[in-house]
Length: 313
Image 1 (tube, rainbow, N blue to C red):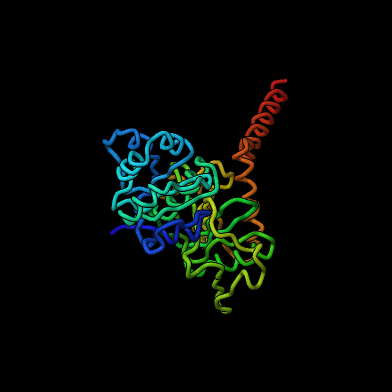
Image 2: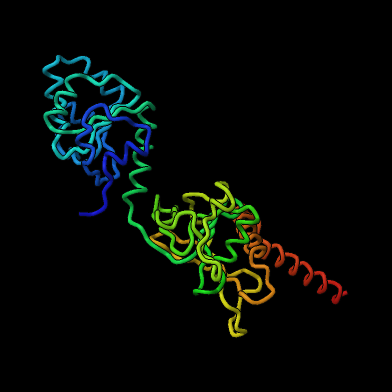
């Protein structure tokens, strides 16, 4: 079987509580989609996704209140199937006794949420998408630099973790060291986080494994972050040519998302932490519409035109 989330884990993570079915919270949720069963309650029974969490809000309850008790039982039997992982009732609405009766018959947990229905739907969907999404592991160190998600990559021993340690000391935050797990939220967004076993940890050659949160406090770590920039650290052997003007933007593709990538040569005497800070700020400036390369080229063109005019005179 593929990835799944148990109802128990869902209730431990989100602001929902179990009203009935504590003995059934081991049921598996395999779909990140949440169903609003309004159509099935109105007797349109085609394409009913019974294997999804079913969310009932004020509209559905208002409709059910117009029915007799026996009619409500039949309606609830139509949405409460044995493969239904759970039914969530939003807005702390009192759960109808008929729903509890049917849930007992079908062994389906009933959950209650405080928020309005649209908020509960968004929270459930976001959480399940993050848990059930396909994941891609990439070697590197993932940091939050000036609020941006920056992934440091490069060969083993190039100095990624040591550079990350200096950045943490400068006030930036660690997401993951050594192995980063990425999953796609939408067509433009990748989220990265550390595997549970590696959370808060940073490996420094010669020193060993250090717990960043213990040394620098909770402000030095962040659980997950959107990936916005990849910085490849490359040992400078004098043979590699680099784009000196920064006009040739390169990209790495992870899943279907293109992430900007830049290369930074590594050699003795370079302050890599400061260079990475500058790279992050320069990327942010570019994303806001300012390009230093374009500004330089404009000045260069103006200078050339000015020299031509002088020579023509």
